[in-house]
Image (cartoon, rainbow, N blue to C red; front, top):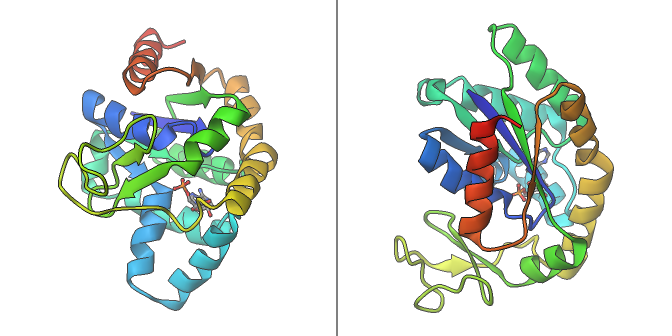
Length: 216
Ligand code: AMP
């Protein structure tokens, strides 16, 4: 089973992808996390990717496509995958469809998490993430029990370099121009599930699982 999660930055895509993957026993593959892991290696490729990420722009397709296709071909992913942050433009979507078709596979469903723009800006401003397990927190909506420490693993919380006001605006623009067209692309394939992203993390999670189980 291959499920894609679409949503503007701040829509709760990552948070929900982690939860739903646990519930449905699928592997969570997040391109943003893969790209941030690559940065720890400090290679030239990593530096190139970081320059795009810090500006809120998409990393070139030749980097992300290769990275994702090789990740989902790994043995642990054969149980099924939730793709979080990929595809992010039409070219990525088409290459992904083609590559899966060559193995007689296909995307099953695409969950689009919908949220108002002002809510996105409010959410991104207060976002903190665990350095160890990537669990996201929010200073107002979901603060950690101990400030600066992860509830799950005790790891240190940090703010992403690309969560600054300027970069957030750029990421929202890139989402509207590059990623939002995928909503039509998957709707035409009859795979789109639109889910209201407002409400508590639990409420939205339940809506997503219910939509996936209904299949519409
Ligand atoms: P995310 O953690 O999903 O918000 O991604 C953070 C940043 O990583 C994005 O703003 C992009 O610069 C880059 N990125 C993540 N996924 C992709 C992708 N599929 N294609 C290109 N760039 C990506």
